[in-house]
Amino acid sequence: MLKAIRSFIKSHKFLHSLKIQLLTVLLVLGAAVLFVMRGLMMSNIYERNLEAKTNELLSKVQSVANHMEAYDFMGDQTSESIRSELSLLVVLAEGRVMVTDSQYRIIYDSYSKNVGGFIDSEQVLRAMGGNEAASVDETGGYINVSVPIYYRQVDTIHPKGTVYVQASLQNLNNEMKKMKSRSLLIVFVTWIIYGGLSYVVAVLFSMPLNHLSKAIESVASFEDSDILPEGYYETEGIAKSFNAQRSRLKSLDDSRQEFVSNVSHELKTPLAAMKVLADSLITQGDAPIEMYRDFMTDIADEIDRENKIITDLLTLVHMDQGKEGLNLERVEVNGMIELINKRLTPIANESDVEIVFETTAENIYADIDEVKMTLAITNLIENAIKYNHREGTVRVFTNVEHQFLVIEVSDNGIGIPKESLPHIYERFYRVDKSHSKEIGGTGLGLPITRKIILLHRGSIKCESEKNKGTVFTVRIPANRGNQA
Ligand code: ADP
Image (tube, rainbow, N blue to C red; front, side, top):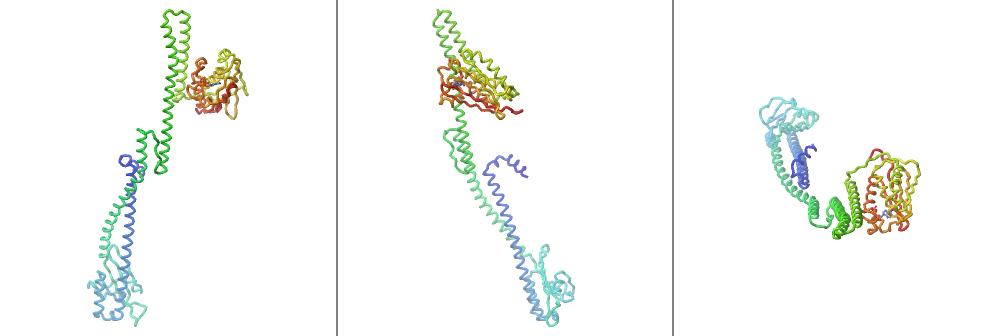
């Protein structure tokens, strides 16, 4: 049933409106309640009228039976006064009146058909048993009433006859029919008025939603302001979430734009340097070969730098797009770090920096993406070498704490100023932009590292003090099972 209603609503577009649905429900409910009430009232009125008519009839028949006793009608049926009373009873009953004697013989019949005949209907039998009887024959459209006639002088216990009346219900039924059609009209008029009120209610109920949708429309197309949360708690909730979502999207858009302008700027810098170098070679037509070699070496460096920026950017963009999932494997972490150290030792040697590796266990296994984790840790150790003093030390330490793999990369280098710490994971952020060129930084190393750690559901923390050194602590779950 519910399914049928749902598919009906689905296939009729106008029913998709909350207002229409609410109005329909109110109208159907209202009609149902009005019809049930009308039905109950009608049957109540009918019952009461029937009861009143039966009681009236009973008392009339009783009084006639009493007079019969007084006039000894059973002995002498010529009494004019009783006959006229019986005729009045016929008029009141709009039906048939019969009088029977103690032998169930009919001694009076208003239809004059069955005088002398016998009657043994249930009502007469009950009246002869000493009880008044009244019953309704709804199919035949009659009320049957019978009352015993006593003769006190002779016998006060056994009735000597009965008065039996079959009263027609036709008048009552006609009256009820009229009342029914009148009540139908009243129900219809009431329903129309109720429909008008329901429409107002439906409009009032759907108004906050309409306001909300209009506000969202106008805010989405032109205005820069928030939607005012008004109306129901629910619509207020929607407005608040919309505002929050909007400001999130706005800040995302802002950061995208900033990113694009940063990218353009970063990519333009090496190009500008190359252009300057090439131009000066062109303008100095007779430049010595050494100068050419020097300048070409600088141009090649700039190309390397451009290349590194593009490679780092692509790595970040791919990770952002979620294209690169994790290729989790059970990896022996100490071996992985020793390999990184081995690869970075020549760079460290160039700056007279020593790399020291310490661990709490000989073998530490963790479920990680070896390629990505190698890139992340390489960035940290490379930074610890780059931003170090001559004869400085880089210490790499591994440990397992409560199912977490902990990798610590610390140095006693130049450190990071307090105010720069919150920004170090921002793309293209460098503490000292002027020296970054000679150091070879792109400002993308730490964002890449952080992204990789987050992909591993881990965390990265940095503690640093200017001119004292820096400690990066990475924590990632050691056992991830098969989940990526
Ligand atoms: P970069 O390619 O410039 O090294 P990163 O994203 O790796 O970019 O680092 C951002 C900035 O954080 C660096 O420019 C540097 O100023 C600072 N930084 C990173 N690691 C260290 C460190 N170990 N010691 C001092 N400064 C650091």
